[in-house]
Image 1 (cartoon, helix red, strand yellow):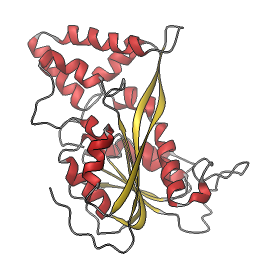
Image 2 (image 1 turned 90 degrees about the vertical axis):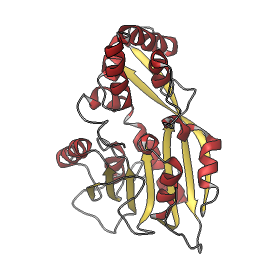
Image 3 (image 1 turned 120 degrees about the horizontal axis):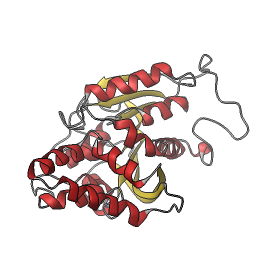
Length: 299
């Protein structure tokens, strides 16, 4: 979600390993919007045939996926019948997401993509029924402002859903494990895992006209081996790739790479040579209050 940090590399090798969590987040958001959906897969009733993409009988909920990346959230939403918009600041990510949408044959709802900044979403107040982010907005700076923007563009009675890695979980510990060879996270840069801290999240949304609740969920992440996972993360666009470049310049990358392998091995649930991680994330669910005037986002 920050310009320049997410180009190059191979996102799919790492990010697709947990992309299936997006369907869970979309399902939770739509169930919160409409409790009649509770217990169903997104957009599909038990025993029902998935909807025909060419036969929409009614408009679906308007949904915005902030920090869509390669599109797992917005595509899951479209499969569930939503009129979905994926937003990202990085054009390369949007191209990947748009190509995946173009190839998909099972989309029940509409999908489009917009370049934009989570700190100043290019939509009017109350534009969406659901505003969500799966491991996306957590990387944007000015986190309090981002929370205000998510709330601003969600209509009264609408739902906000954000999934972010917890600070103490295996995914949340990847960056600190590698960065400690550089002296840790710069104090001027907020950690993405602040979005995985219920107290921090509560302080951001507390002054806003939205009632949020949080719970910890888990997603199973699989890689063929620890070495495969280390290589995938080392080449994944984003902050870790930038850290790798700094470590290589300092001659410390191989030591940091070994630290990362040790982290994965310590959390590995597989005994067959593969890597299986049960990665915890914080799910934030909120409903925007009815009847409250909402102003522009502030820092």
